[in-house]
Length: 132
Length: 367
Image (cartoon, rainbow over all chains, first blue to last red; front, side):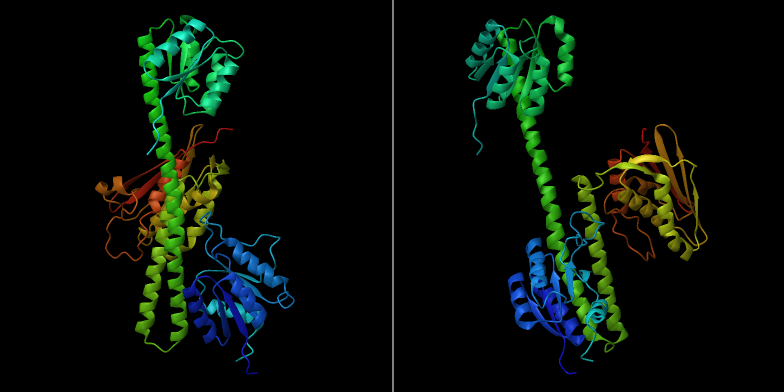
């Protein structure tokens, strides 16, 4: 099958987007980037990716959460694998953040920076690797 | 510019002649004066007008002067309280000072004496207000600093590391070993810088009180066992024996587990790092009703005598040749601050070529 699987990455740091894009493209995926939550949700609807990666630490914490909820709330987004990105928790040095119980379903919590190999492995585990 | 207001005084006394006398004397000096004849009225006026200085007679109707002083010192701490007493209530005046009053003035007093007390009270008030302002400013800066460092310094580093990851993905197996090695060295130095920022943040967090605040009853024996377990692989790899001798009881203290685990891990790791192969690290503990004391000794290279006073200073490092791992230079500073936040102490003794002993002393938990 020649169609590449599509991954949407939503993060307000352009450099992080670009660096992640390079890794994902080398991994054989078609990559879509959104620099803010609003664009991210719109892109989700028009592109219908196979997986999305959402930064929780955008401008406001609420933005990532609202994007996640909106995507999970759509027909196509209900069962799609969603990864979220976090930085080390700012409240304390030891606990890294984990989603609370009433959080929309998240398939994986990634901590920045993400190792290239790991990222590709996690994605392959969720959606396989049809393009190779 | 801050608005300079005429200082405001409040006189709470049931004797009309004293209220009037004080009012006249202070107004003569250009001050504003309010008066109250009893305790409840006094508190109400003080709450509303927030005087710079309040003179409070101990024997007043409706509410004892002591209760008034206690209430005001709690509710409007910037107001300086001066107790007025007859000679029979000296003991109470001392008690009032303990409860937050600044001074006491014995009856009878002259207008001159009153004005002298008023001046001193005002000075004290200015110092109090200034001190609070500075303290708040310091806290604000520290908080701002932590947020600044967290966001502005960490995020670029995270992105740089993500770029390195993408660089590695692009490079694959195409480059010389030398190129890969340089990339790896870059990663190590970036990680070192991240580590440094983290440790530095830890220090600021302890200072601002955002760290190690939740103290509960815990067993040091268990914490030491946990750290020993964590450092065992390092010791094994360097064929250093780790010997733990602690008494049967649990060595109970009040503390924050997470930060104490790091203190012990830090010191045992240091010991392992500076102890040659086939050396020994011993951890022992003793306790009495007052203190729990833990000794951590190694048979390592030791610390030069003239360097010992500085090892707990941030960024101080004893220069070593052939150092494979450069630490952040903040580990012992962290340990010291955590020990202090536990009301404890840490110090070191050492002999070059023979070894080093760190002594950690905690106040025992009183059951």
